[in-house]
Length: 122
Image (cartoon, rainbow, N blue to C red):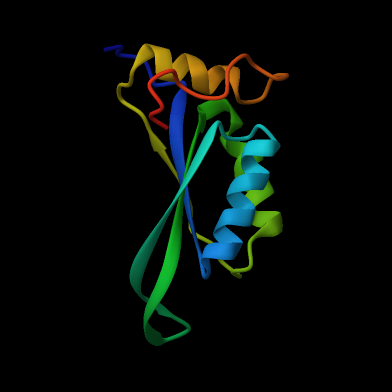
């Protein structure tokens, strides 16, 4: 494990529907702003405009390079349906060297070899 900050991160955002989350996920991967994007159905509890909410949402988790975060945040913000979307960056403290190399190959630069990690784990 390294002492310096990780060059990789997971970026999360939430969306109101599976279709919107899937559309955003596909576009992020196609734009090479993320190597992998995963969707999960969640239930969110929050206060917005002085009202308590209990809503189903879709959590989108994007694996990417930390250097791409500013571009990814701006890209999500431009396309997100919420007025104030959740967009957070979670730094990785450790990870499989092979997987992180695959993330590097599939973000930012031209097309990289392979379609995913050899072990199939995204």
